[in-house]
Length: 371
Image (cartoon, rainbow, N blue to C red; front, side, top):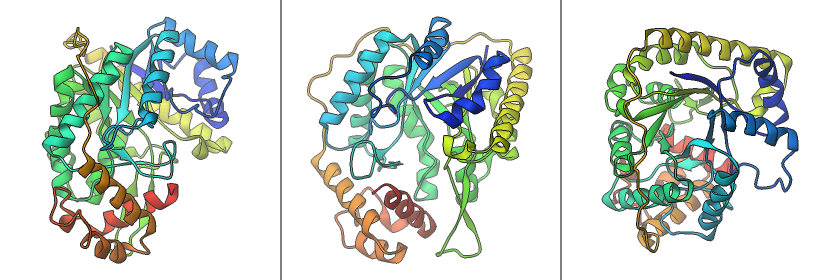
């Protein structure tokens, strides 16, 4: 059975939007970003009670934001993240734990947005090492979310296969974020039929749907870049993608509606959020009526992994530092391109020479927002 779910965090606007759905008992599962409350020393008792209700019903899933899976150097913040995960895993019954693909840019551990990495054997080994550590900590299924951002079409086409290689050693799974794919369809002129077959759909346990925004491009003035900003209603095209995709994911268990509180500040926004959820729920109800097969994979490795010192790459770490500095300090994409071609990333596995100017612009906007 597939569960109609919401991403519900300690945010007044989100809670105002979700409350009518909770009263109507429409919400079948909650996804909680357990590492987003790093500034909150005392979580309100009523919010803990809400999480515990879904936890007791085996309907609580955990979503990480700040682990920075592919940082080349292991950090004390990652140790703290795992310690926090261990603590909350004892207090709540998570059905699975997930994280974002990429590494975090930004001034500190809790500022930034995930940025892609080169698909090499070194980054693959680091990613597998981190996934094993997450599983050893939470001892429940572990998954990764596909990334919306990409620098090139080649990167877009290789992402699904790289995710498969990452999660397979721990029998992990994938969150297929359909709005992330929607961004790539527009930004790289690729069709859903072409891109979806590049993903291991039998490893999809969760689907995200959300909205985003359009951004003007200086490098390509006649077109706009689609951004995964989670601050608007779900486009009709994303609902269509959900209907098309859902039957190809035999192990799908959760479909989650995501929206940031900043996009739910008015009653009109919150009413639209409810409409979006009800449309999601209608699609899921139909899929459940048609679904005949039971879940084939529990995504548990049924063993803990022997891990010693965390894998690290000083070369990758230094390249990430250099890239972050370039993105955070560039005056425009031309300036960034010039700096990249005079950096250690030139003629490297990052393939900066192939980066699309409009996406380099977008990377600069992402990095400078959080710097």
